[in-house]
Image (spheres, rainbow, N blue to C red):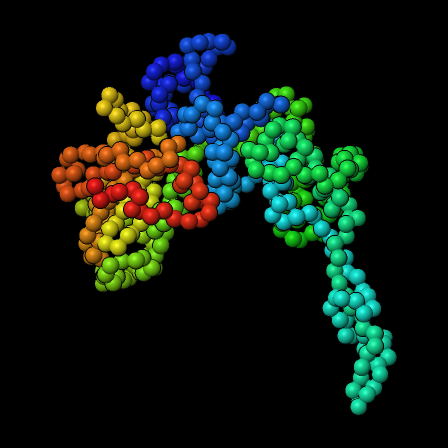
Length: 450
């Protein structure tokens, strides 16, 4: 999450921390010749100290928590969509520490989505409001016969009620109240947009010593087959078994966030610009019907029709062997709008592109690949009436508007008839709003016709 680099203007202004580009150094304490660079976005807790690591495109001093709250919601949604597991521990071996913050957030979010742990109890009543138990009613009640038909004056009914005295129901309340209190003391309830909870006056210690509580949870796990309840019980077990007091974790590191925010940005852009790479060819909004050459591939996804490298070996005997490699070009996202084929590449860089200087730009490999994506789909586009092609880099910015920054060009490839790469800066908070609300952005805002 934290790297040390030599103090220089180049590294101070860099926008993408790559091992091959940056001199990572072992530092001595108080050595002013080094800078420290975070590769993490989110919240880090060390004991009772809290670090909020903003995305690198945010430069404003005194920035309100509003943008960071939104970023945390985006990371949470991304983790759910990628089925990220709860990292209970950070580090390895002797340096391992319990990831308290991630566990607290899971428990609180689980409560807001599903409610308290409950064990239901069936109650049998006479003339109650539940479902009628006809078998028992017929066996045990005397009917009144009228016109040859039986009428029952009393009916046995059954209703299901939550047992609020249940041990685990009450334990869950105590754990949630304690979690909420710790999050409030760390001044993180607002950041994670979580309402403080005061569900009970009971302390976790009121339910027995740690070993007793853990034994009870293990016993409950053996009779519970509901997946959500199993996950909740296991998480409470981890919480209770570990040192769960934030202020006492002097050397422990607890965190919630990601050191791969570039993947989050890619996922967000793919969602809001209607990525079609995973769509089958037969379902694409093509101007022309699927060509005869592609009909056998109708159930293939758009990403699967990119040509793969073939390695051919000539033997001394004259035999020739060919092997197809598994890896090939993989675009970030592609969308189709009427007769236009649009190739996007989401770039989590801090691009500075002005008259006086250029820095923070993607490397040559990003530019060449973007041109090659057009070549990879050239045949497909020609046979389906996709007469326009647009290439575009998408960079995040804290600004409020979509910014046209021009284009990137490699002249020897542009001379082959390939489209130059438009450069657009996107207001990250607006893009994130669309991602969270599951709405798309109209391609027209990017002004790609220029």
